[in-house]
Length: 353
Ligand code: SF4
View 1 (cartoon, rainbow, N blue to C red):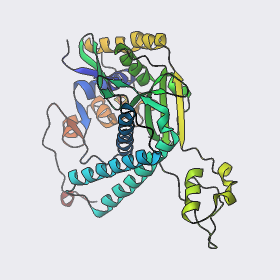
View 2: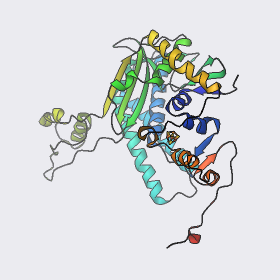
View 3: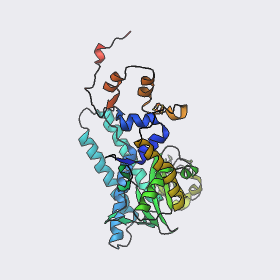
View 4: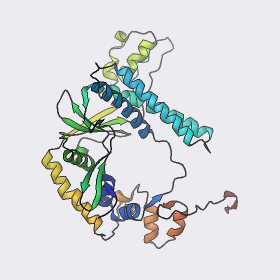
């Protein structure tokens, strides 16, 4: 029996390309990143999950719902704390431009988190608890034959008070939304539903809550003091608030409500029956996990679609061509099982022709 746990990421890597799986999970080779950049998606997750935690606590205590403002405030405070921690951990070698970029990114994360709380109708959800803790970004593990266990990490598990049913929710900030057909083949959600079922939490399906990764723009003021009526990428609540802040009457701008129809959020809900979840587990996940234990033949799934954007490409193709991968492991890649001294190339010593 393997003494390591397995997760959806490993299954997905194996199904996508066995060479990639072998390289990243068995040989433990990863790309080398000098400094991990601050990730806007993680900042948003951090803020929103803190707001959900506040809601979970309120629900436990039977508190009448607070105003949405309180949850938004909790999210923005959490993102500011996240920012402060990032600065503390990366204080060395960060220049002013990088600090400004991070500050702008935090600004955006704050307004996206607030919009998400508005749009998701935050208080419609009754958060499910498991073993004394709310199911908000909780690591859950079940037994799996041959492995130490199978781990999953849902963003949220909650009951929809209006439509009924318990749902696994995930929020993703994206530049382009995926359409609802993506949910039919969403293996990750199916594995989460399976794990929850094994923990005796029945779910109706999953919700992919997508949010644009650039926040809405602020509407512009005209020289005469009125608000511009041009169609800009913003929402009616933001436009309305800008009117109020400027002492203008939203009643005079009601036609803008239909005009500002740029979607910033998209909720893709997908019902997945227990029988379907079970079949996905038995016919896809379980056989893939078994095959990994059997030292499978390592084949490259080489295709434009697969290899485009694959971070292992240089190493994979270099090894295929018989190139010096040892040098790559000291420069652009990292062997986590055998870390080497990094080779630093002094720009002054580089030949310039
Ligand atoms: S470049 Fe292509 S073949 Fe190589 S590891 Fe990546 S996906 Fe697999």
